[in-house]
Length: 68
Image (cartoon, rainbow, N blue to C red):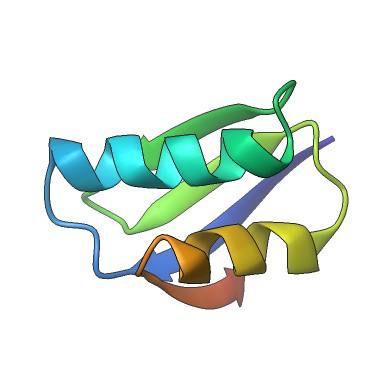
């Protein structure tokens, strides 16, 4: 299942790598795509929004919730 989340504070390629690494640390099989322009993170392979939120927050970014 694919879900997209709003994440604030990402500004560069390093931020993208940090978010991807943090999410993959809690769910190694997940696919993560980051859209810096829209501050969106799309994740495939995780159904628990709280797991994504925790990973993003632990990486130092602001998890704003799912995008509908």
